[in-house]
Amino acid sequence: MSDKDKKQQSHQKKMEKLKDNVDASIAAADTERGVFILLTGNGKGKSSSAFGMVIRALGYGYKVGVVQFIKGAQLSGEELYIRDQCPQVTFHQMGTGFTWDTQDRSADIAAAEKSWAIAEKMLTDDSYHLVVLDELTYMLSFKYLDQDMILSTLENRPANQSLVVTGRGGGSALADLADTVSEIKEVKHAYNAGIMARKGVDY
Picture 1 (cartoon, helix red, strand yellow):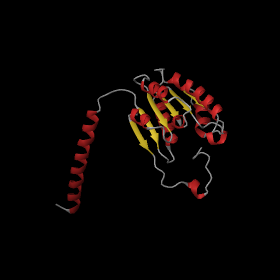
Picture 2 (cartoon, rainbow, N blue to C red):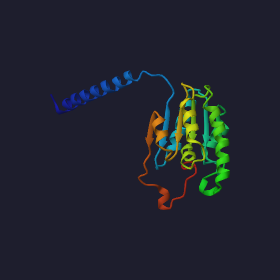
Picture 3 (cartoon, one colour):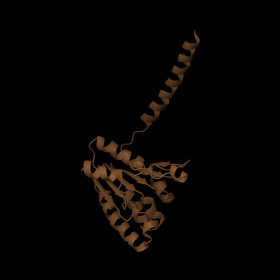
Picture 4 (tube, rainbow, N blue to C red):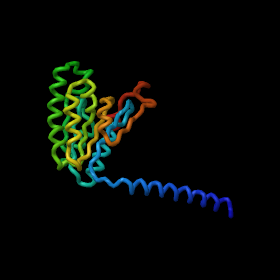
């Protein structure tokens, strides 16, 4: 047997073993229901990942709801596109911008409560296949919204509705409730090198 044939044989055995493991994992996943995905960590890409799932859901014709906490003072590419091109997406932004810009706790809490009321309607409406609560974690970290109220609503949403929550922190109870938790770690960031945020990439 030539070296090439030996390498092919070895590769085939490895791939057969890998396929067996993948097939076994797929067969073991026999529960059909919506999932709660938490995207956290100090790295860039949490919201971008969430909007990737929005596009994925839209590809199948599903109804989607998006509520953005914190953001909203500055237009973003996703807002412009969704509002213009995606009427099947219910889209709401808190509209106050970053809390370190407003520096008005009472106004931020009032805006958070108004936005949560909109999110809560989505989370009790089984016509929504996917709901994205972008930067919700900050509402818990800053104690703008009641944690028990939020956790109860998230846990009791319609069984077939999937949920994506993004943002840093948010507490262990939120992570414990989630089905999938992904932590995005910053290795380096262009901003720290003095490079300005790029339209169409960063916002």
